[in-house]
Image (cartoon, rainbow, N blue to C red; front, side):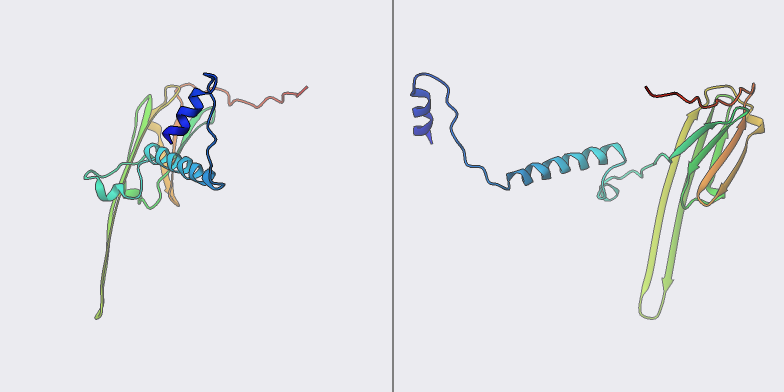
Length: 170
């Protein structure tokens, strides 16, 4: 190897690149590396990988997916809270924002003559949103149905609901 590199450098003092043999499947190694990098960045952004629950000593709190809809006279907040009962939801509405907390801690056990089965689950959700306008917090109402929490909060001063405008493409 050293002999080749010296020969390459000695020729007319010009830089000549040595030809290397690359496996026709080397691009698969690159693909594996790209997917590993993507998976790692995804895990960092969205709460860690499958082994995190076994290595972390603290329990994770996840942010539920939320829609904030301006209906003109009120704001409607829809949050996904799968597997959460209404008794487990702690909802706080202020004049400028909303805070949603939910925590479930369930266990199930079956015991039979030949086996014993136990399962425990824990889930914590927390999300804080700010309203773009001041609201009447004391008139807020909420419902939880099929894992979707819907909160309706009237605005202090209603605004006309925005109407879509058709724009011609030239």
